[in-house]
Structures are given as C-alpha cells and as structure tokens.
Length: 123
Image (cartoon, rainbow, N blue to C red; front, side):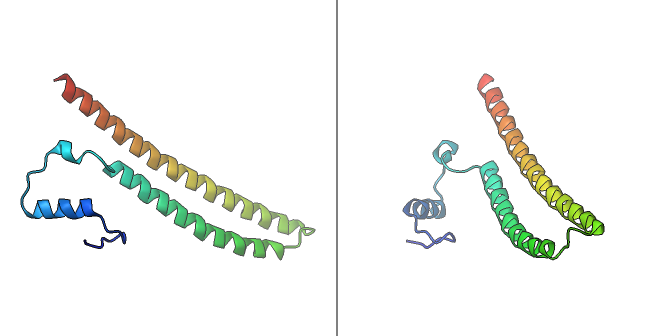
C-alpha cells in the first residue's frame, strides 16, 4: 500500500489510482461520495481561521502585558486603553466578517449547484 500525503494508507485510494493507471473508464456516478470543492474551501478557511486565532492569542498575551504596565489613574492612559480595546474589537469583528463571507460563498456555490441539478432533472 502507498503512504499518502496525509500519512494514511488507504486501499480504496490505491485501487482508484491503479484503475486510473490502467485506463479504466470511471463514471460520474461512481465518484459521488466524499468532499466536493466547496467542502475543501470551507475546511481550508477553517484551518486559516484557527491559525489566526492562535497567532492572535499570542498577540493578546503580549497586549495584556503591555496593558498591565499602563497606570490607569493618568487620564492620558485611558486613551491608550480605549485604542487597545478598539483594536481588539475591530480584529474580532473582521474575523467574524471573513468567516461569514466565506460561508456565504460556499452556500451560494451549493445553491447554484442545486439549481443546476434541478434544471438538468427538469430537461
């Protein structure tokens, strides 16, 4: 068996690769199971967001240390705290907006595919 890039050995994949190499004529119906491109895009976006969150947590720890050094009795420092909070909120809102945009793209692709499939069935 072949060791694939994900570190797994998969007999079914080995058989598909072998049959493809032998010139087997695959039909669309044979390959319906599994992930489609929209699912892969969603998984990649999820991984990107997870990576951003871990990087942000590190940044947040640095900011907490920075905030701990600010004397709050000084009125000028209130401005620094406001700016720090505003930056954090903006980052979080931007993250949510990015995830929502990607989710809407995936939903639109699925909707378009469903409409196409329905049109094919109607004809």
